[in-house]
Length: 494
Length: 105
Image 1 (tube, rainbow over the protein chains, first blue to last red):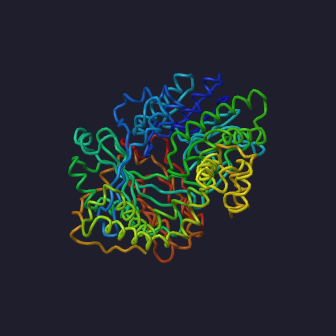
Image 2 (cartoon, chains in turn orange, purple; image 1 turned 90 degrees about the vertical axis):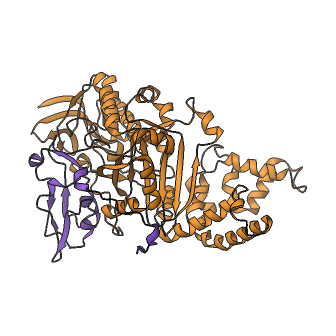
Image 3 (tube, each protein chain N blue to C red; image 1 turned 120 degrees about the vertical axis):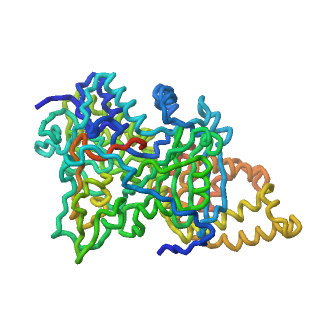
């Protein structure tokens, strides 16, 4: 039997960063990895966004030199219709505002977990944490309902003041401690197929970009690495699942536009993987007596785009800091560790989950709804036809006639989206900052002779009375650069 | 239900993929029994067969059945455990240092 201040289960990004932080805080720390080395068991999209430059700049700097890295300066979106025809392709590099926000411009990176995980584990061991590989932690040691340690598959017991469970979506620790059982509908399954490809051809044809492919019947992301890429499909694990994962992958690789791209860059299938990915409206309960959950084990991945590596590091850091705080006070009870939830909710991690229910509903109702997706693509094509650059594609009539015919078709399609807008877009309007609503209203005020001379406060009161939907934004006591509180918005707007 | 009708001319050639060859494993014989299945709890709904990434579950006579040597094919994702509303499937991980090794994950 060994005794530690902190036992961390799992040497993925969350576990390694928790172990690093705990060791740096002077705690005697061990972390366990079931693979032969960190990275053996992990697959993910692993796009590290610009916020890494803000929160983990030293790490980001060092990652640039690792073998699998490809920069991400652009997102390319490929939309296909119900007959697999490529109908719409656009790429965005972000606006000047995006570029000015970060000292490194818009650069994110894609990196294999094969590179990232050993690097992060190395930071933890350098800080003094001990790493045990090829060791599966398969049970918790409980005493009076409090987690006191863990057991490994070789029969060892490790006692700890605090256990940090970073053992992924299937989290044995969460289940054995009674914190949680199945996710029950909130977790997705992601089958992934990795391809090797010619690096130089990728530079020329793919560029520094992430790609996505969406059609009414399937969608896939394509994460591009230095000399290869992988595609990932998937769905929420619910009883309405209607296609086998192998068939989902086959559907994507059968698309002619996808095969054309494969030919162009010399792509060949290289590795088949599958993993669970919690994609939740809100994280599960993240603590119990003597134990905290971090990363996927807690359900932290972003509710909008399901990226979870940054979230794993953030939660790992906060959990380790909370562990140090609790140990120094001599109280690791469930009540004391509630501090962990208070801390992550107050951090950027909590901000990310403020719109969890709205983001997940939006995804569920758009790309995962074949009928709506079919119509959406038609709508998007009509919107794009109104663009001055697009009008050259349709020279069937005089330009202004073409413009009006496309506008008419757009107006024909629009009513179908009214219900969609009311259900899924309106709740997101809560996130518009009050000061931005006020700016729009003040710009309008300048152009309306009747109210131009009215004091701003009186004008806002008048608007709030006339348009109830705007009233929540005009409450003078609100924070001006934060979402309207959920209760206030629902009371006034519904 | 999905409409599988597609224009033949727009369909790419079938890309031959041997999924079995695309997974690396070590020490398969030492993995242990990491998927436990309780036949009594199973109601034969077939969701496990629907979500398995290697088609390791089949439904026969109203009960699910796991391939005998599932260790040789399982991707260790845990989807069968997560989807089973009857909680007839318990998934843990194979023994440390064994099973799937992901090289490009």
